Every structure is written in C-alpha cells, then in structure tokens.
Length: 168
Image (cartoon, rainbow, N blue to C red; front, top):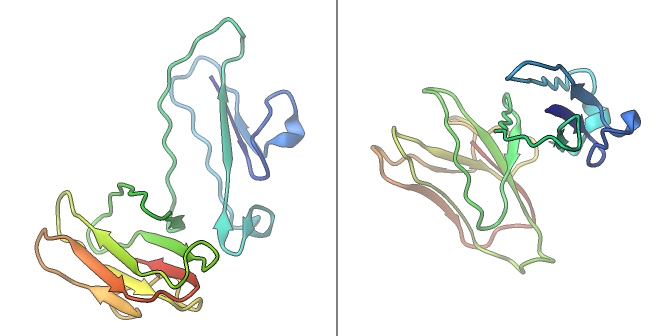
C-alpha cells in the first residue's frame, strides 16, 4: 500500500499538490511517516489545532489490501468530542493532553464532566480553563481530581463557560 498525508483536504494520490507527505516504498511491510511541525506549524495548524487527512491506497486497481493504521502524538493536544470516549496509554509521571471546546450555539451553559476510568494504574485529572495554561499539571490547573487507586476520577463543572478546556 501507499500512504499519503495532507493538511488541507483528503489526499488524492494522482495529484501531488493535494498531499504534504507520502510513503510510496514498495516491498516493505511497515511504513511510517513522521510529521514534525517544528518549522511548519503556521502551515499546518490553526489556533493550536493541527489536522491531517490520511489516504491509504493500493498501487493497482485489481489489488486488495488489509492494513492496520496507528497515529500518535508527541505532547500535542488530542481533541475530545462530546460523549465520545477514547483510550490512551500514558507512562508514569508523564502527561497526555486533551482539549474540548464548549460552544453555546450547541448547548446553552452546559455542565462539563471529564471522567477517566483507568484500565490499569492510578491516574489523576487536571483541567485548565485558561488559554495561557494549555498543559495543566499537578501544580498548574483550574480544577483537579486526584483519587487514589484504580477508581474512576472525574471533574465536574456545573456551568461550563464557552471556550476551550484543557485536560492533562
């Protein structure tokens, strides 16, 4: 298979201007594309949100392919969506960061609950409602939950303000 990554829209393998990165190597089983935004953040990101579109295709129409795909971030914020759980693994004494947007056009003065159910280990939640603190931690946060053990941790905000909440 060939892998194409675009930052503006779904990549078209037949149009090189529609993708920013590709891996067209033949005869290898694992293909990787590393996207490093260090020098290109303005090109790929808007308001600290970087979005990529991935296309996987076979080089020949008559071929069939089966594959697994994995995307990871290195310290970036993973956007959360209302009611959609995700699974993540984090190493000890490290953080994974998330964000969720509260839009009053969608819900008027909604309650916000951030809940984490650990599959293993002990996790804590730190939430920031400040744009100046997009990586909340044990010393810099607006709300926190530090339950001990493997119990579900949660932070509840009765009337969430419109804007973005950051979770670590």
